[in-house]
Image (cartoon, rainbow, N blue to C red; front, side, top):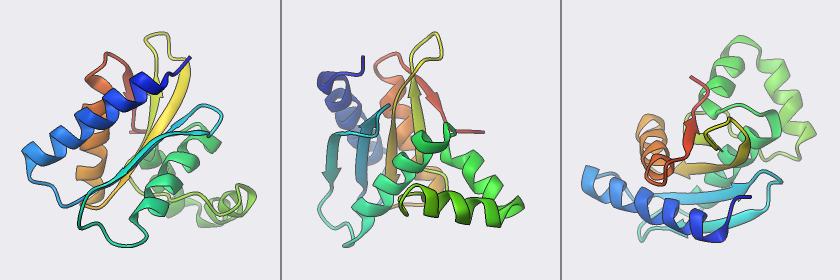
Length: 142
């Protein structure tokens, strides 16, 4: 089970990593394996729709069982599939890095984190730092 306490710790660690690294303001959405939102934060200065983008990265990752880096590659190679999948999941699929699956040490899917606000690579790095901070496995789809 993925707990609220775990999500809150990941959120705090993600924010600390972003601040230490000098990232632009981030929106961070953390969901469980069902897609239910567990935690969310938008730093001061994020643009209006960053939260929706972050949630789309997380939802898309859980919906297809792949980190959004893999979804990005699929979007480049098979754009019609990603377009259809986006429609199938109700539009909440953003196929760029920054959506990272959260797994336990046995590989069981616990949830995902989606981040938007800096470069996609930096969004992903912040997500990985947050997940790793509590000993869980970050699956970027790389």
